[in-house]
Image (cartoon, rainbow, N blue to C red; front, side, top):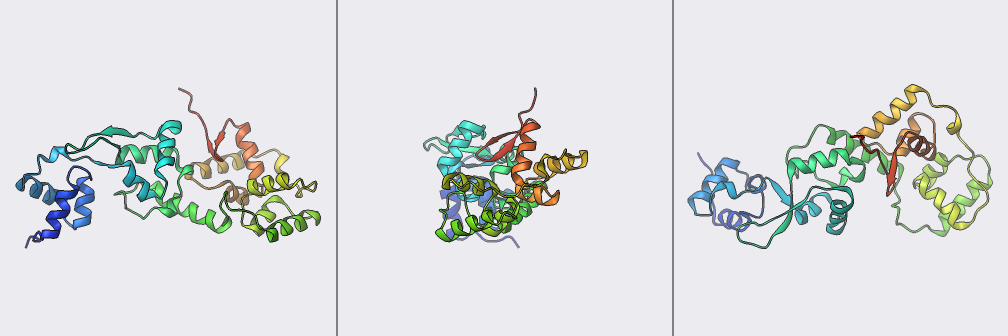
Length: 260
């Protein structure tokens, strides 16, 4: 027997029609897309063709836990494919098509922390998302301190002590402080410390298998620290190798321009 439409269901449909995707409305109401389209037509909300298979920039911001201003910056600097669209006689808003978002996200997966995105909140997810979410979980376990989180006097003392011991590598110090190797390197510079971590074998020629491992894991979204652990290098060494391989970094995120 068909599920009856309550007054609350109808109110939600009327409020969201034209400003939210039919898929999103259907998911919220627990109905099929066809059912929502037919009901909207019967109550005079306009042709189903007015629907948009996408999401507004504001809704995307909430869904992936990235600020609106950051998304706008991504659009300007990194070609996030947003566009202006008018919905149901309302003011034009910035929107992005779901398929366009996923295509862009796959090419820029290092910029997104998928542990902050509720599974399926943006509809069916591409197969690669599950592995990227797992990679982000591994990164969280390795690096618990954000790049903007201030260093404490206790952390500074631990850092100085480990440097003065002359027996710890960048990965070991990074793991002890739960900060990235890049953050450790910056802190050493900011404090004007002369001592340096013990070098790993970063200057030994990388094997073909190691290079393949680096590129494979990078393409899947693993962080430099996790890649480095797998081949007994430092993340700083991995970054240097990537730069020699033609990669560039923006906000710490590696990317490689495609040759057209």
